Image (cartoon, rainbow, N blue to C red; front, side):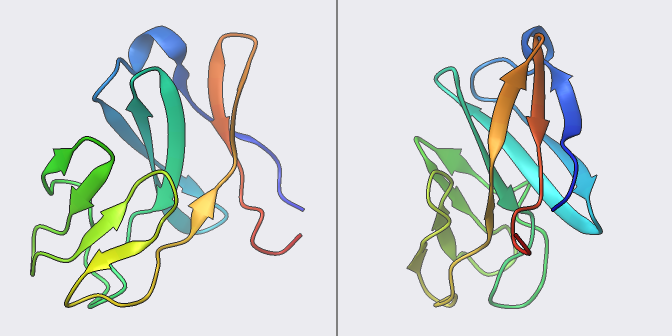
Length: 106
């Protein structure tokens, strides 16, 4: 089981913003969606490109390379050319800090 990794103070990640961090070798994007934090792996399952930088509307991110879309809340692939979901990561707020960890190997 991995340790929790600090992402940002809650005041430094306002609604609609995201921050990327390295968590046990995985690039993870942590999003603030209306005051709730979600984390997904920052990798499109279609071609391995990064997802951040793509358009975010509500809880959906669109890959900037080929237009695949994913639900930020669940990691579910919502549209081609991606058919595999992206990994999600647990997020918590502890002492005013947003933290994420890799639970893939628990």
